[in-house]
Length: 582
Ligand code: GDP
Ligand code: PGA
Ligand code: MN
Ligand code: MN
Image 1 (cartoon, rainbow, N blue to C red):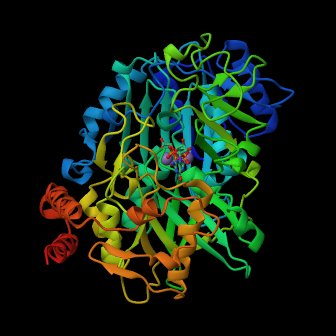
Image 2 (tube, rainbow, N blue to C red; image 1 turned 120 degrees about the horizontal axis):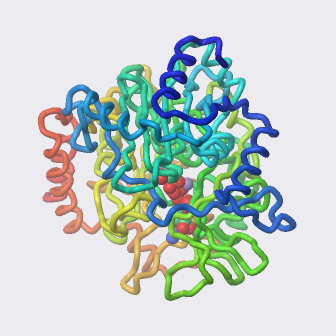
């Protein structure tokens, strides 16, 4: 009996009866506990010590090679009615899903320790925050949850006060992909995940709770749980505007959240503040604006590509107290991935590095680190009420067609921009990489209910008294005929954010086109920017023939959702298609 809340004790006892662990450990979130978890994993081989002189407190975890990414085909939303999960989710009837999972969990923790992990998503004193308890037989999960969430005693105290929490049950099982399922029961505030140790499948506070379960709750309670970074942009006058941006996994959220301004901007006094890099919970405030918190307390970031030239802030926070998963190592045992200087000695599977085996670091290798270690961590990141959002940005990987930036005419157009988002798939999920698919609001893998209802929910925020953010669409990933990116990206993305904020504050006009408002060439600051004028021209132009076929493809996508699709979005799609024909 380790809680004053009977519902929690009863559930823990039920799970222990089913899974038969050797012992039960209630996590308190202390430093001593974290150190003990690390020692245990060093002993059993779950963790490998990295060079403690260059990287104190840093460790490497090597996953089973068949368990290195999210598994969308094995992820289910189990609502009583199939239609409520929507064509965007895999669905199973709740009773069938429980039966299937309970069979897998039966006796699965024999000989293992069962960790009871109370956590809070969001600042511990924020009314917007929500709590959960994850039960897992993985010390790697317990240690990562300590970094990624507010985990331990204060969270448990809040749960005991509120009497309500999301129940997440997880076991690594045998890591057999044939016995792997990630099941969500939104009506029961319950998650059951079996057979994977990978972050997105196993750290249940993150994608499972803070996106799939939370989006479902947010719909009935009038808020939004989104796959968005939150970043503060401080101009030379000292004013800070907050921007929330949704990009699919491995499409630039962590980088944008930690952006370092180009040199000229730094000289002028521009600063960038990181609030969150993956998830945003947004609630309308009494002032009509949307206020956002980052429910997480750490970053689970993509390692490859992180370098002194792309994301120096991330690099600075990774030289101490971080867990690396599936990166390579150098001869002197420092973590290594593609993009870093120097040479790998071993690859992510621990083999001597041989380019014939592919990259040294797995393309979806990750770091886990406390948000507080980020040099640009915002002093508003712990604010109970969150930060007010001035602009919402949608973006994806589109090698062609989609301009560098465009602005929605109004909220409805912006919702269509988000709904119509297309992006090339990445290594963050198993399956083919580089395949173009629709990924509405970057939530395709994460929306816990029918996308058509989700779009209606978004449209509902446009009501009297609302002071909604402007909506933008960006594309950092346009390629030229030579296959190279046209836009330098990274720090230079601030140039695009500056234009957006100039629009928000009414300082510049824009060029109106059927697909949205684009910058006039003279309004995008290109001082000291190395870019071919022809490339800039391509980035800021609208290929009308290409857009005509894009609009018809968007129309077909909306039709796939049938009568639940809000008429307003279909009308907006038709309006744009007609304008392109005229
Ligand atoms: P997240 O998973 O959405 O947080 O994406 P990350 O910020 O971790 O970036 C994923 C990959 O995209 C990394 O390899 C980055 O180096 C790369 N990336 C991020 N931003 C840009 C950009 O502006 N331009 C280009 N070309 N690549 C980028
Ligand atoms: P990402 O987060 O969006 O930073 O890649 C993990 C994921 O979405 O799987
Ligand atoms: Mn993500
Ligand atoms: Mn990220």
